[in-house]
Image (cartoon, rainbow, N blue to C red; front, side, top):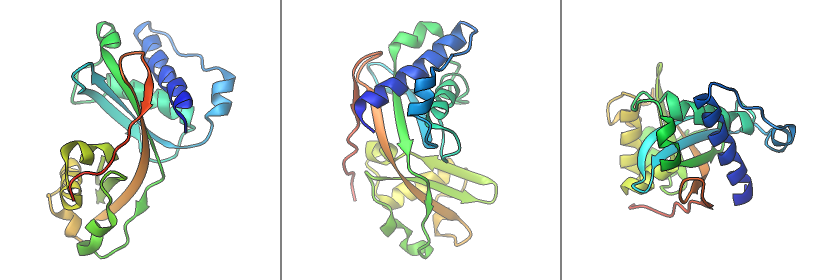
Length: 202
C-alpha cells in the first residue's frame, strides 16, 4: 500500500470517531468500499502528540473484515474501548495522531519450541501467543521500540497473553508470526509517512 492510500484510510478512521462524538454514524462512500474491499488484519494506534504516548490501540488480527470496515472498527475501538484508558474526548481529538498497522495473515511457527526464536525477525514480525483460551498479540513495532531480541519478544508476548514469561517453550503453546506495514501521521491531521521499522537488538 502507498502513503496516499494510507492517508485516505486514516482520514476514514478519524471521521468515524468524529461522527461518534456527534452521535452520528459515518456514511462510507461506495468508492472507498470498492477500493479497500480486500479482507485484511488491521490495528489502529492512537498516540498523544507530540510525546507519542500511547492513548489507545486495538485491532483485528485476522483478515475477517474488508479493510475499510476494519479501519473504522479498530479506530472506534482504540478511541473508546481500550480498557487501559478512558474514552477519547472531543477536546483531545486534535492532540492525538493516528497510526495504522496493516497485517499479513498469521502463520504458525511449526518449529520445535526451543527453535522458535530463530524464526522471529525483529523489525519484520509481530507475534501471537495462544494457549487454551488465552492469547496475546504484539505488533512488529513494539519489539523495535523496546529493543527486544527474539527471546524477549516471545517472553513479552506470553506476558501479554496473561501466561508465564517462558510459556513459548511449552509444546502446548502455539506461536504465530505475521508481518505488517505501518503508516502514521507526523502530526494531528498532518502528513502520513510509512514507518520504517528497521532492526532492533539481536
